[in-house]
Length: 353
Image 1 (cartoon, rainbow, N blue to C red):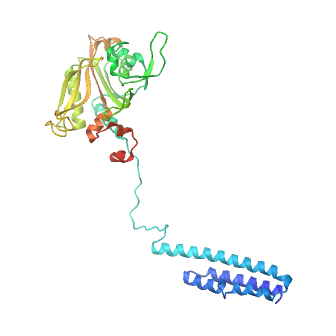
Image 2: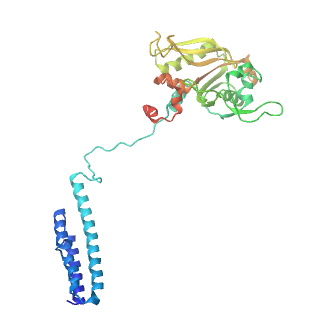
Image 3: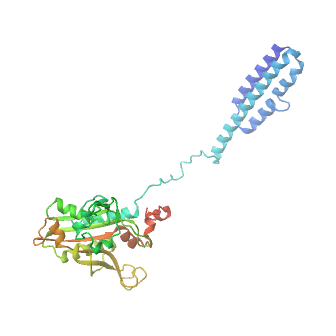
């Protein structure tokens, strides 16, 4: 055998092998092809053995041609095998690309409102249905709006109730004008300064206080305050409004209780509680065995506050209230630790999706 005839045999083996391989559709047929082509007694092996019959100076080139053929056919074999296996797996239902149109579709995971956000929206919607307008204000506030115009002048002992986070250093006169607001009440002043009565607003927003956190206290929380100012507004209007709110949020059977309390910007001030919705007023762990649950503070707007914004307290009167959105959510959903709201615990948050 000479070099030319050897190369002709090599080309013919390649053509025949590739053609027969393209016709194969099962693994059994493919295995037969492998044995006949690449096996111990296959055509490629026979071609390699035939190198010894060639002249010495032609053997190197012939060996390279035979090995390149073997590598080519081995690669084609592996590719064909992989394709047949994937096809058979898909038909039998074992493959990752199986699409069974008879199965129900996979549900898409959707986000949901944070429980605090949901509580804020629900509370605001209740007051909006009673004629109040929802407004928002700055979280970095001036001292005069956060304290002074709310009847809390400098050195007033009531400032101890709000552990403030100040933004600026003390000015030469000793004052510190900017702080993170400790309540949303400053927007009551800003609103009254910008418009004449009647005024009916509800103000939700983040507030900040420099204090240690525990199960019922956070350094940041969401507060919702409300204000109504007009002629001939009385404490009876305050009671009717907040009783209606309690029924809308906690159920139609709820009763409200008003007890005296102190807030510098209202006079008289009141602590507002509802009869416990867990025990119906009999006493339980939720209400501390008292039968009542405190939900907010409220009162009639102090005459000095009205006069400070240019309203005549002899003509106009009003009432205000303030509550924590997290507290309302805790009461509604039986949450025992306010820190859960800001821990980013998905197990906790998914309960409200």
